[in-house]
Image (cartoon, rainbow, N blue to C red):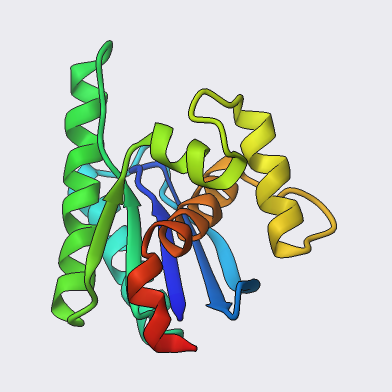
Length: 163
């Protein structure tokens, strides 16, 4: 099963495509979509949408795993991230790819085995599970790969048909 994990944002959108088969993860493609700080916000959304469409078209996933949005301190930033998340969901919807949402605690639990794990623990376990030499950078990319791993672990009954 090919899974696309996405860590939403508007300055940086992390993405990671992994294949999960027979209990083994194989990284296919990962990276980050970035937008310049001084650019008009609608233009930033257009870049995110266009680049994500290319990722979806180049390596069509069976599922998209996205972090649920939580914001407490800075509501303006949270609203902007929500708008970026909207174009991400739109791109997946237009391609008929189901979207699954996970909380940070669910990601930590499924990747590390402990819902209150530290970020570095999640990043290191992601690296190990994918057999990578080093933790992918920026952090958003590693987070996106962790989201893909989370979906593979959480979608157990779905994955039976891919064996």
